[in-house]
Image (spheres, rainbow, N blue to C red):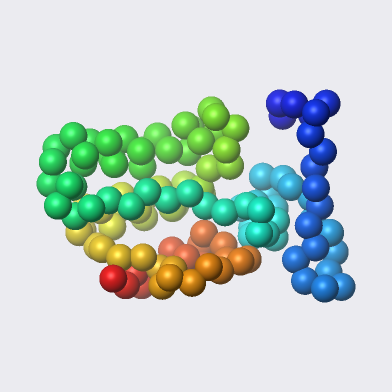
Amino acid sequence: MENRDKLKAVPIVDKPGGSAVLPSMENVLNGTYQPLARPIFIYINAAALKKPEIKEFVEYYNKHGENLAREVKYVPLPEIAYRTAWDHVQKGKKGTVFGGVAEVGVTIEELLKREAKL
């Protein structure tokens, strides 16, 4: 990890009386290091997706996103998230699973099980 001599890892207590959770790849992926960890998604305009260069970018992102995230020291989404996202693009699925509400402590796997809404 870069800048260990300049930064201090901050443990977070999610619920009153709960245990403090240190930042780690595992704790980010399992949803216990919240609310400081959150997924980064891309959203594609359906009309723009008809352009070959946009579709190529989205395909590249979903095929290489995990490695690219690690390269810049981000925690990548689970591999299944990239595959599911690309599957949704190919099937023309639209919408979001968030419904305009900020949620804390939700895992990527839980999000993937939801039906997207416009």
